[in-house]
Length: 150
Image: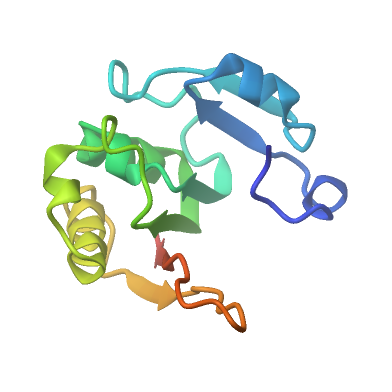
């Protein structure tokens, strides 16, 4: 499963991924390369310095037990002027999320991510509410993007 638009595969020179599940990575047909790795055990990213224009973290920042170390690695592999885009919602596997996350509201999540980014060497981030509203539905899953430039 990929969270990127379908046209990315045709328009991007390289789409790399690092994740815990090698089968999911292998099944993602948008990737040009991937590395299965548990960033909670080894937060080092397997990429050269200054090698990416954009780094994304899709609904998984809440599972990292060493988020600042991981984001320092993101800073290292990002080119100057590159962007970090972190998506997050309040839906998660409560057995996998860090306990602090489970006791926070959406605004606190966004402030925490901004803090992680600043401690990792980035400037102040911008947050966006991209929650989709479905007509006739009472409940919508909140979805947010946090973005910062190196």
